[in-house]
Length: 324
Image (cartoon, rainbow, N blue to C red; front, side, top):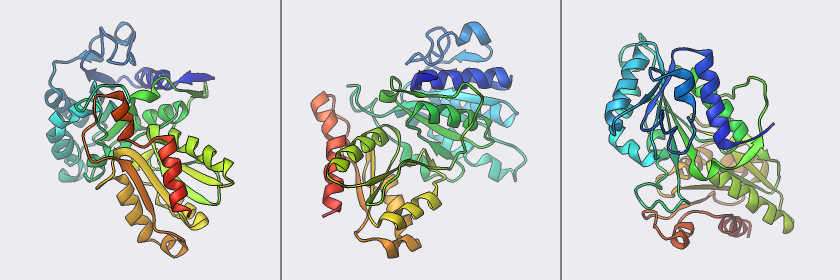
């Protein structure tokens, strides 16, 4: 059946809470208000305030509570209103959640999910529009997931909640209203497995989240020029699906990696290095091209905001330049 990205997130949470009483939610305005974007609307009535917890404005505080609850055998799902607010919870995420299972020799599990809306495009300015996912890919012990479709987000969120290690789960704000087919039956998707959204032989275009949809638009534009682009959705940024990326690079010989987050020191850089260090390097006809966000804060102006992150037409131009 067809449903929105937002409804898929909501359904995944509701189904997992019904399946396992150890799953509970906590964050700002999740209960009475129903979440900043309406994902948990009606959850308080169904599950009660012991499992849908409205918290103080203290991400560091309630994330620390969630870390302790996860160590005690619960499966907390934390929500931040905007992904930018993760900055005030770096210690419990990076120094506690990411490391406790290792430091305690596997005596505890850490089934913690931190889900949060990310990205630009809503005119929310520099402190509410960032894409900081690459930060957490650099931290051993954390998994980072960033889906692009209603089907993927439901299957991956359910898998993340069942995962025994901490997961940063990013949902782009502009994806909430997008629609797609989602099975009515139960399913999960494996964390760490990319998806080839479009088969092609002339160029590999790698992306994720909202930029993946823009990349598919760019692929249609390239098709009009007689160029057959393969589009890969990472879905999971850490761990990354090396096998799928290497196979595609060897197949096409040309690779473009594009994402909304700032280009320097980003996901594109890691993928470029990984492919260059693999046997795919010997199949490349051109150097790998990165195309990410500009090295600047996200502007408030809608016109400027759209200029500092990749769009379908600029991704198309980047691909054309690579194919010269």
